[in-house]
Image 1: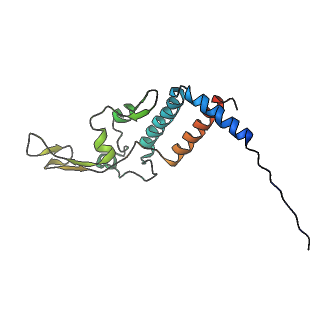
Image 2: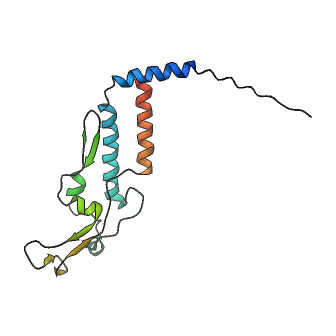
Image 3: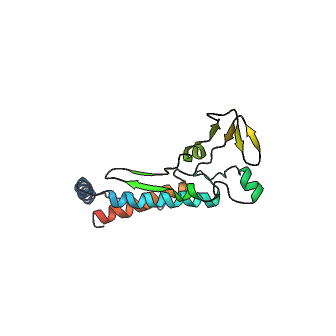
Length: 163
């Protein structure tokens, strides 16, 4: 009977040195450049979702009545919500979002009821006691975003420790 023997010898001294180098570098690192790159990518990804009509999980948004009637795109009449997307970064965190008051109802869905009247006047439909807006998530992290964040972070770490 013939056979082969494979012997692996693992020396972790190099790994230990790299870990210490990384620990020292991270202790004094400026994370803003990394966070800016990630935030910019997430903002661009969210803008692309408006054109694709897709949520971060890849599901298609329910077409709006206006888009169905006019052949336009859901959530893009004049593009104000899409164009309002912005990224904010500080030393330890990032945010991507909108300052538009109606951003949340489109992201999460919900029911709109009139405050001071008995009915909402919905263009093309007429008066309604309430209007249900389906969720059309445009903010979030997709599988592609996760992969991009991993790649950006890995490149940043390599640069940080000169690899």
